[in-house]
Image 1 (cartoon, helix red, strand yellow):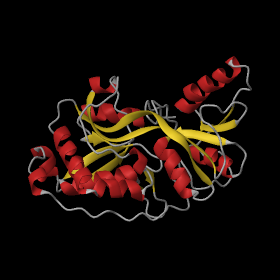
Image 2 (tube, helix red, strand yellow):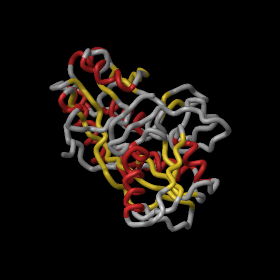
Image 3 (tube, helix red, strand yellow):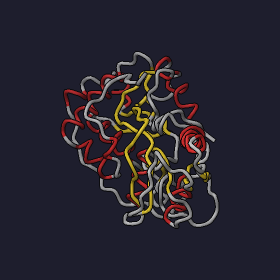
Length: 302
């Protein structure tokens, strides 16, 4: 399993595994999903002033070589019909590349190998829902483009309090921070207060966790905010977000430490934010709650 620290909350992200049986198209999806929702591309144009700032090596190649680990819907996953890597991150990176007069060349890799490959010069950058944190900033620079945290979902019309779910069944994806940190702490608060513990129901992938909620097998689930938003979008009318996003941290694109590419990517995504195209892309994938209005380099909290 690949492990990611971060927001996916400050999260441990497990690679999705088929748990068996037919799963609804929700949350963390498989490469082999039979159905992927059609999402229209937001059309953007090259900005000559920004393209002129692209480092010469990248400009000569005509492309950004991007290390990516999949699947992690809705940010990056494979469309089974076309075989292409798609998602919110992909549409945003494609728009950034176009703005700079480039193409994005996605190279699939193990998550833990992406940053070392950037340091070695194999990839120009990484794009895999990386959380920008202080520890990672020692190795690479991050161009921040999104804010993600944890968020709960419940059945439509239910009334589950994420801060007082004593005695409730709550689904999580196995090995995530929601299973290892968040829910155990909340359950302990319940028992310390003399209340029933939270029944933490762990699944091998987020699709199964969301499916359990749709079927009423659990009372709620907790996941990274873009994953929850996507699950709700895919199961409209059946489940809904529950409470506010919490424990937020920035997602960023890692680039080599001190690389001149970092400021160029920052300027390009800021241009998309200012033009409204970034917002449209986030809305297309149902993750606009995590949209930000200002990109920074190395904006880790704490």
